[in-house]
Every structure is written in structure tokens, then in C-alpha cells.
Image (cartoon, rainbow, N blue to C red; front, side, top):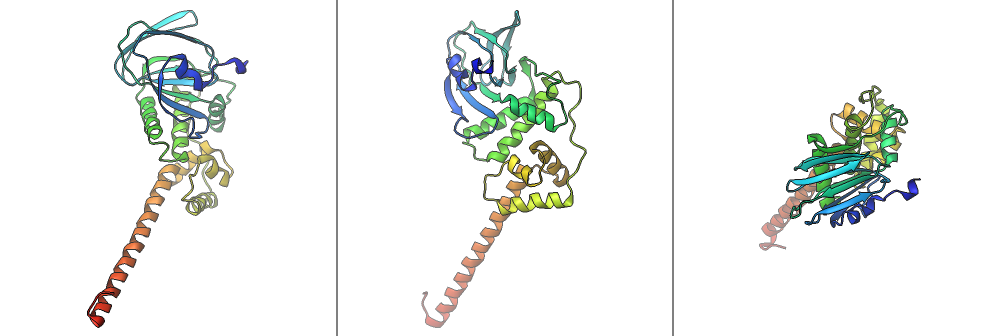
Length: 282
């Protein structure tokens, strides 16, 4: 029963880690991210089945780690960029014999419902595959996505909900491609936006440019899934929805600055004219 599974919020406590940053109060949909400082001392912990898919990215000094699962023992020395991945519902045992190693790993927990939604939006039957374990693997793309999430976590969500959702979609698709039993490839959808749909999405973005837009909100405008929307938008515009929103905000800021500059110049010219008539500035 899922009610007896370990909650993502309790992971750091299970490992006796010191919490550094957490997305708990940021309302990120379907994903929970936190960075902790691991204990300097050796540890041993047995985790019950997790309620979410758990990705751990190693950050810091090389550290030995032992994992026990399915009656098999896995040993590795984790280096910067190495990852651990444990699918939801899978118990595991972890042990580190050596002490004195300081590291600040990044934990990323994904709701199974989110993974299922992304899979189905990519025309994949979510009942026909399973996510699989990963231990001590160097995965450059996975590490890059994780570091972008960490930067956003440390900034307090400065780039907004749309950016986080875009990163999360990319992360899930990468896991489906490389950490699952899928035999079919995940390709971009072959369908396209109609001109009306594309214009509706663009008009909506411009109307609510000051709002913290989300993929789900933009996708609902044209009545398609967020995954399809992100892919189709980039296919048509050449950039992601998040990049387009940032681009338009920059352009709007430029226009506002130009108007402000023109107003200042006009006021300055008016003062000069008054000085010519009165001999003093007013």
C-alpha cells in the first residue's frame, strides 16, 4: 500500500542530513528538490519503499557508498556528477563505512503521476514500462539538468514556474529514455500548431506577460497537453516557451526604458526653453 511508503520530505532525516535548500514552499508541481549536507561520520540506513521516484546527484568530494537491493550488493566511489536513481515503491539499503567525507548531494523526487502524464502525452502506454535503478552512473545531461534545478532552488525560484516545469519535463523524458524498460523511442510529436492556435498562445503570453505563467496554463489555452505544447511551440518558434517569455519581457523592458528616456529628454528640453525665456531654471 502506498500509504506505508516513505515520503520524500523525510529522506534527509533518514540519512541524518542537514537541510540547506528546499523547494517545499515553492509550489513546484510534481517535483520536490532539496540540497543537504551529508554527515561527516559513517552511516547505515535502510529505506522502506519510496512514494516518489528518487534521484540523487553527488556534489562534493569523492565518497564511497554501498547499496544493497534485491539480495545484491553494489559498491562504488561516487564522484562529482555521479547519480543514484531509485524508482518509487523500491526499498533499499545504504551504507558508508568511511568518515570525514563532506558532500552536499542534490535530491530530486518526482511524483509517479507526473511521469505517467509525460509518458502518455508522448503516446506511451504508462502500463507497459517501468523505471529502473541507477547506481554511480556518470550522466552528463542528467547532471546539467540537475545543476539548473539547483541554481533555481538556490535563487528561490527566480525564473518562475514555467522554467521549472520545462526543466522537469526534460528530466522526465531523459529518465524515460535512459532509465526505463521502454523499447520504443520517444520522439517529438508529428502534429503541428495551427496558425490560430499559435497566435492564441502568443496573444495569451503577451496579455499576461507579468504573470508567473506555467506550461499547464499556456497549454490549456489551445487545449493540448503541456508536453505537446512545449514541443510544438519550440518546433514552430525555434525557442522554448520559457525562452520566448523571457525574450518578450526583455523587449517590453526596453520599450519602457525608451519611453522613460524620451520623457526625461522632453522634460530637459522644456527646462532649457524656460531658461532661455526667464534666465533661470524652473
